Length: 337
Image (cartoon, rainbow, N blue to C red; front, side, top):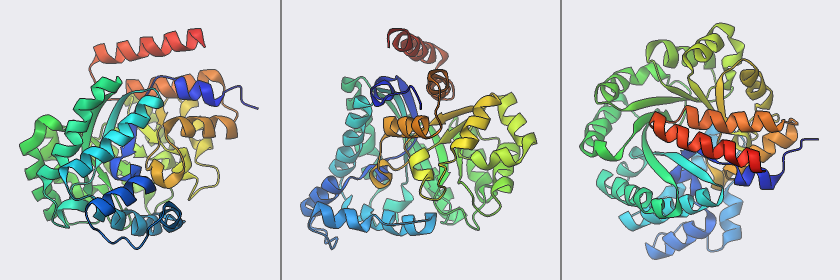
């Protein structure tokens, strides 16, 4: 049995690098925003909302996930969504967070890019009062067209000072990373960081990972634990110190073992894999819950859990000076707990 306790994982200083802000829409806030904006969501109680959160694969999840966003209408809505998450991040001792957001999911239903980013960004500014350092990563929806991605990046660059990087998410089937290579090149040229979802157990998973790493030269891989199937690619990410972000509780919806064995194998091989919460309102737990779940199921040692937290800071997109501050906090916490 693991020596790790919930108290230890909760207090552990950590960075969260794989968190979709739209995936933090808790039933209570969904109902509040629906009422505020006169949006008929077909549910009137928290229990009714919770019953809609039923899925067993990526496609069925997305069928629930995107319609829920209809309650997000105003800058205040996006602020409230982000600040609610950031308050929970503070409770989980998340010291730095890089938040994914999906502008196309909102602009495609008539909400302006400005409305989305202004609300989210103000929440990241105000989160400093919570002692949480936050940044935004704009994701392209891979099941939208390349032209939609081009227009989205063009608009995003107007707000470049509010975005730290770009990502790629949504339905991976028939939407390989290479489809968006041009947008990622343009983002890199504009000085933005790059990461790509390579979701677990998808069709052509290894080929997608190879495209992201070898052709698009991304700086992180989100999910991506199928990489263990190709030792050459594992060696590549270990050599280049490319981070992999794993989300045990959401992985558990499609893989009973939460990809924990793969996480441990990657840790053993010196890969900078780390633990995050993905869409916590939908998968039953925030980041500390994810740490505890994998530690308990796979009997992780204290050293392994601490290494996962260390990896999260080391693969974040912050300055070496900031990393050292947070890593020193981590060392101090471990020494005193």
